[in-house]
Amino acid sequence: METLVCNGPGELALVERSPIERGAGEVLVKPRRVGICGTDYHIYEGKHPYLAYPRVMGHELAVEVVDPGTSDFVAGEVLVVNPYLSCGTCIACRRGKPNCCTKIAVLGVHRDGGMTGLLSLPPQNLLHAEGLSMDACAAVEFLAIGAHAVARTGIATGERVLVIGAGPIGLGVALFATLSGGVVTVMDRDEGRLAAARDLFAIAGTIVASEGAEAAVAALTGGDGFDVVLDATGNPASIEKGFDFVAHGGRYTLVSVVKSDIKFADGDFHRKEMTVIGSRNALSPDFARVIAAMRNGQVPVERLITHRTNMAAAVQDLPRWAQDKSGLIKAVIELD
Image (cartoon, rainbow, N blue to C red; front, side):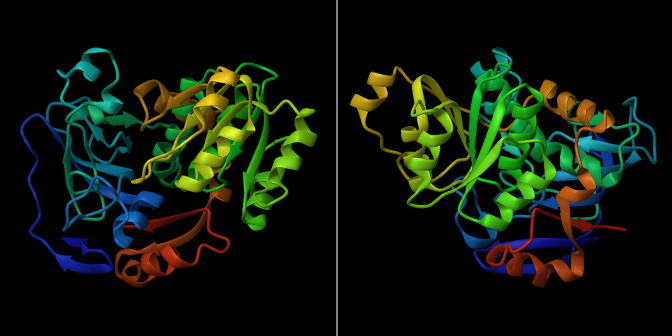
């Protein structure tokens, strides 16, 4: 079976591997769509903090059932994948937080993912997806990260929300913050991405991340700052700057993960009595929230997916898109 392997930073190759068999108690599935995530670009570039090479990437997946085993799935059914494989017994799992399991294995990060011909997965990591296209199934996971961040933050109707970063994760945050009743402003340094955010969702406005950003925030909020700020940039400098945009008594949610330390002024943090929240991956209710929104026509999937490729062409396309994201929101690999 064709498999796209990242052998090390900047080393991507299409190879043939022997087909696998279904694992005991698992479901054998064939990936049909693989969304290319910022994580995948970081793996290719050698920037991911939790990774060992070589690695088969791919965790945003639409899969087709080949052998359902003893599960309630049926052969030929297209499913959504929850790529977070948890132990079920650690302190996080016991507290209902398998998304931050102490032994978590994320497909395409800690173990080989979906850029291949077959996968054997636990049935609890597969979700029915009646009424969803293959493209929509592959988009559920990255949108669930945004839905989880919004749920973690607890956005109330009418709260002023600033989402920093208008990549796919940030757009998912903006979408579900809007659906939760927030008055959402999006900030990014790329004016093309801001135009896409305005076109895609009913947001209140946008701010260019530049020297004038602080003045723009003050003007939009009457000098108060935003009730809620969520950073989805993966940029340490942006994360540190985001503290300045939070109102007194406000909340700051960090959606992206970076390798470096994050520093902030403790005096300002205490003066504002700010709450800082970490958000990692997503939970089953977040996946369900996204699937329901898709079924209700609240997610413009066909406009979020802007680029397509196949396994052979991805050897050149993925490195190119890692460097040039002009007009790119989400790219998918189509598998036969």
